[in-house]
Picture 1 (cartoon, rainbow, N blue to C red):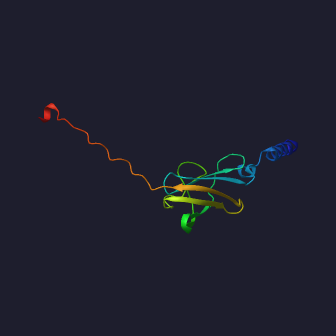
Picture 2 (picture 1 turned 30 degrees about the vertical axis):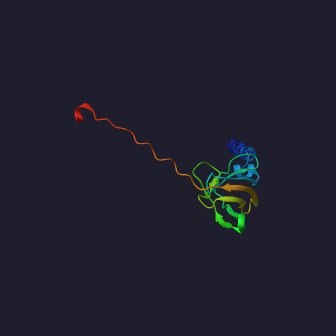
Length: 140
């Protein structure tokens, strides 16, 4: 019985050693940041690990921007957006014009990305057209 316990313990230990490391270790801790405009005055960022998997934990990304005419914005901490893992959004931040945007990630990632963004005034959808309503027979 004692030999059986020792063999079982050795088998469990061998299985634990053979299991792959957790997801964070598999990614190597390096991030790639893709920075772009949102079509209006905001900035979006997609954060993925160097192996292509989306960032699966929150990271405090910081945005700074320099625009035409010595305009600046930031530093602003970006919030995770509801669009999916690794997706961040600034919301309305930049006035219309051309901006050079830099997003940085803190240690242990120590990554940054810079992109040129063309901010535009937010557009409003056109007003809906009126619909003609005819009275039914019981309403006449």
